Length: 169
Image 1 (cartoon, rainbow, N blue to C red):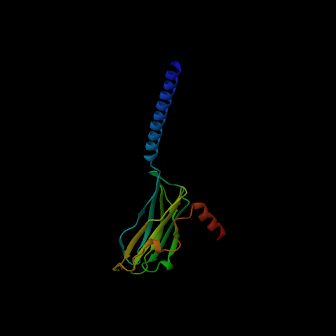
Image 2: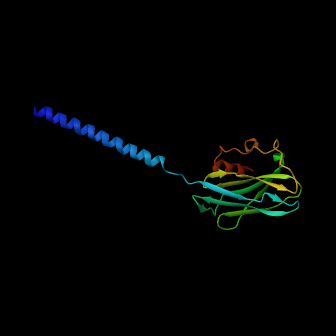
Image 3: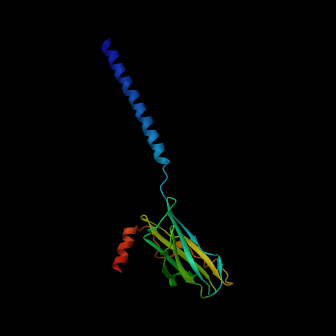
């Protein structure tokens, strides 16, 4: 009789231990689900309209986890007239302060200009797209840029591959 009680107690303790482990696992899963990863954000600041011949600063405010990024690996502004993405111009952004990078650009013709602020920092790459209208140009819906059509903008590469490609050039 004592042996039966002993085995029942051991079985009961095993069941209780298993239940408490499941509760701990569930609590760990809930904690993991609520973790937010830091994000690389780029606030690409350009006016909507400019005059033909006007020179402005293209400005990118770069933050990671809400902190200014002072050491971005790359901030490259790519500019083209709408419908002519193959004829783009690339301008290296210059670090100013507080995570701000700028480059000057002159809008030489009356056109709709589209532009990316390619930004690589903290092993991440983002490329916000903006549009600026120079003069009285009218945006064309059928020529509006679809960022997935831009052939050399592959999000699948990582920063190390990008550096290796630059070194080979």
